[in-house]
Each structure stands twice: as structure tokens, then as C-alpha cells.
Length: 391
Image (cartoon, rainbow, N blue to C red; front, side, top):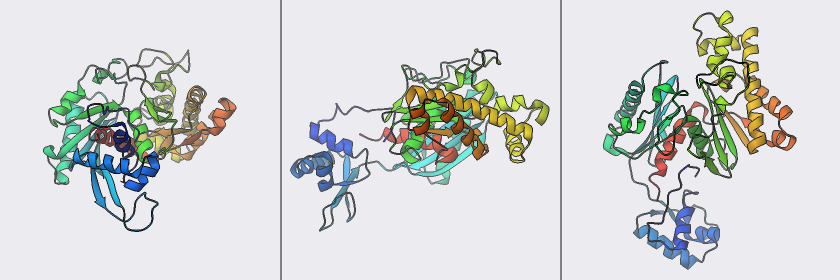
């Protein structure tokens, strides 16, 4: 499982082989004793002893079954899996223009989601209260209670310092700067809470449930109201020194461009985000155009709108090309709302990358849309909540 957190087992009274057996369950749902012995290169006696110990510690549980990972034919094998308490997992992801809450069972299987629009300028306190209410509503609908929540994963659309777990970049996300979002949620739900930025959650969602399963080097690039990236290198989520890696929306692209809300000039967000594209079309779409107007006119083949979108896609392609040269990913996932405007967006990004990245990197990378569509982040939130339950 892909997660930014690697929890220590040092406090558990386990031998090295017992730890290896326990770790194996984190990458596969079920194992038989024979399959574990073959998988880990241990004797069946050693594995059987480890399974007995782990059951005694209530870390795994035994399931009767005839199918599993055991290649041994004959009588049905006994299958084992990680022991997970019963209850619900919650996820709340905040975007700049929306908020989404999701409810899953203890195995991380999503049950239901609910989403609401967020007005620009709405306070952090008001948004947090709405997220709490949405999760309460999901619990009520699914016969759950606050006591049945096992953990909650949270997402915010900006850089989050891993030491303080708050947004520290005031210029990037001013309404959330210095706000203790975890405390706002914890007052309603006194359970384990985890918070990451939205692009990293999208990456974790796709790596564990979506198109990037089994791929070790991935970039999840969210292009929407803002632009940000989640980065997976050698199977590990890369967070940077303080957890704020991936702010690709604030790399300079035009030294003579518009001043960005971060305080710099010509950032990628000023030319390729949805608000930037809408701003360039004020003479075409009129005052206060909406993202839906942009999408509708694009699909009507409005020449000006098509040109503006293609120019944004080319700028995204240049940024992806730079990341390909720097990180050499196997896959780049174009998340967020903007890439869903049409297949031409992804095609344009791909063409720019192939033309501008160095040959091995540009030709080998797969550029695709997320398999989980607009639910990548909520799946990521559910996943980091579930990780807190695993030994």
C-alpha cells in the first residue's frame, strides 16, 4: 500500500521473521501459510509460528476458505488477513470551489460521497463546519454514529507543513493560513486525523485504487482552480523537507506575465489554471464567466475558447516535460477538472512532452487521466485514514 506514513513496529514484541510476515499482509489482502512461506522464503514451521503469534496479539485473523494465494492443491487452505476493527472511515477533501465528504467501511471500500460548492472568500471555519456536517449526514444515512468512526483523512488545496500540519504559505491559501483544521474536525470527531494536500491525496488514491496501481514512479498533476502535484518515487510518496513538495503551480513560466497571488510573477497558475483561462476570455465570455460556461463553449467549438484551452494545455505540457526530465516518471496523471474538458487537452500535453522532454523520458512516460475520475482525492483521504488502523 502506498502511504506517506511508515509506522514503526519497534514497540511490538516481534521477531524479525514475525515482522516480515506481518508486513506481507500490508501488500496483499489474504495469505495462506504455504503461500507466505513461498513468498517470504521462510520455512512453513517458521511462518506457522509467526501466524500463531500474530493471532495472539490480535494483529491478524483467520478465515476459512478454499481459494487464496496458495499454489498447493488438496484440502482447502486456511487464509489469514490483517485484523481491522468494525466501523467506518471518513474522508473530507476541500477544494477552492468545492468540498467533498466520503464514507467507507473499515476495509477502505467507499460507500457514499457528498459534495457541495464553496464560494470564493468563504472562511475556513465555515468550510470546516460544512465538511463536518456532510460527514455527519453520511453517517446518519448509513446508520452510523460518531462512535463508529475509526479515523478520518483530510485534504486541503495548498502546501501543508508536516511538522505543524497546517497551511503555512499565507500568500498561496490565505483563508487557511495558520488555521488548525485538525482541531476544527477533532472537536466534532475525536478520532485519529491525518491531513495532506489535495494533489498528494489524488496520487495516493490512484496509486492504491486507480490507474497507478503497481507503478513506482508517478506524478499526479491536478489542474483546476489551482495547480499542484503529488509525487511518487521508487514506490514512496515524496513530501520534501517540510512536506510542501509539488507546488508546480508556482514555477515561473513567463517573466513578463501577471503577478500571482503567491507574490511572484508569471507562475504556471497565472496562465494554465481555470481562473487564468477564464480571465483571458473576458471579451468572449463576458463579465464573471463560470467554469461551466468555459466547458460549454469549448464543446460548442467556440474558436476563441478552444484556442485558450489549447494554450493552457501547452503550458501544462511544458511543465510536465520539465518534471519528466527531472524525475523520469513512468506515468503522469492529469487530475482536476480542467483535463476533463476534452481528449484534446491530454493529447496536447502528450504532444508537447514528446517534443520537448529528452527522448527516453518523453517517449516512455504514460500520460493519462485518473481512473477514479473526480474521486481520486477522497479515495486518498480514506486510505490515509485506514493506514492508522494497521499495525
